[in-house]
Image (cartoon, rainbow, N blue to C red; front, side, top):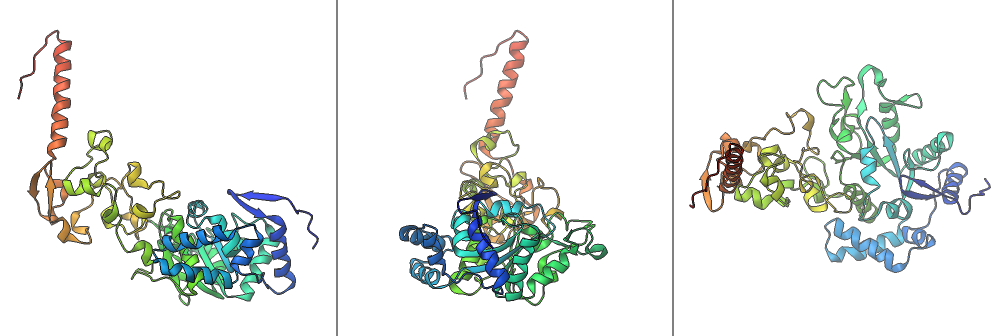
Length: 411
C-alpha cells in the first residue's frame, strides 16, 4: 500500500491525525494479522518530536490528575518507556456525542497526547481518519487480536430487537457484545452508558439499557456524567496503561479518585451554604454575589463527582461556578427525580449530621429539623435587608410619581 500523503494532515474535531502514520497502522493490521506497532509509548512520542522534558511533564501531570503522590511519577515514566501503546476501541451507540466532545477537551493529559502518543486508538467513528470498509477492517483486526480496552459511549436500545439504533445493519447490542468478547475491560463512558440517561427516562420507549446490563462477563468501569469530565476517561486509560490494572473503584463501580465525594463538599459556594446565604431568584442580589444555589434546586449535596475540583475545559469552570444549579447528571435516574429547579429534601443528604442546623443570616442561628427540609428556613438577614431596600426604593418612586416626596427616617 503506497502512501502519497507524506505531509498531509487531517483535522478531526480539533485533533491532528497523521494520514501517513494511520495508513501504516492500517497496513500492519491488514497484512500482519493485527500486529500493531511495537514501539513503546516513549519511543513513539520521540518519533513525533516530543522532547524528554515534555514527556516528563506529561507523566507528572498524569500523576497529579490521578491524585497520586510524587513517588508515582517514576513508575509512570518507567511504564511509558517500556510499554507499547495500548489498543483502544471506542464505540458510539445511542447517544448525542457530548461525551466525545468533552473527551477531546481533556487538559491533563491532553487528548492529543493520549490519542497520538499513549494509546493506539484503533477505532472511533468521530475521530478516525479512515471510513467505511477501511475503518471496519482496522476494527476487525484489533477485535481478533484481543487484549484491548473497550470504551462505550451511549445506551443500548433493546426494544423490538434493537431496531431503534443500528450501525451497518447490526443492532448496537450485537455490536457491543462482539466488541466486548475479547476486551480486557469495558469503560462505560457517560450517563447514557452507565444508566441510560435521557433515553432511559420514563417511559423509556426504546427500552434503553446501560452497558453493565448487557455485558456481564467483563469488568465494567462506570464513568457517569452528561457529559463526564474529560480527565476522568483519560486518567482511567492512563492508569491502566501505567499500572496494568483497573483503578480503585467505588461500590458503584466508578473510579474512586473522581467519584468518592459529593460536589457539595468542595463547592466554591459552600461557604455561603454554611452561612445560610441562598439565591432565591436568578436575578436577585444573592445571585449577583454568588451565593449558594441550594434553594434553586441544586443537587450538588447528593451528587458524587469531581466537577468542583477538576472542572471542565482544563479546569475553567463547572455549572455551579457558572451560576446554574447542579442537575445531578452523574447519578442514576437523574432525569426522573423531579424538576431540576425543585429544592431537594435535606433528608437526602449523605451526611445528615452536618446539616441538622444551619446558621441563618449574619451571625444569627436558626435550628430546623432535617426531615422538614430547608424550605421552611427563615430568610437571611442580608436577603431581607436587600428586599426591604428595594421595597423602599419602589415606594419612593411611587411617591415621586404622585408629586410627593418623603424624607426617610433615620434608624
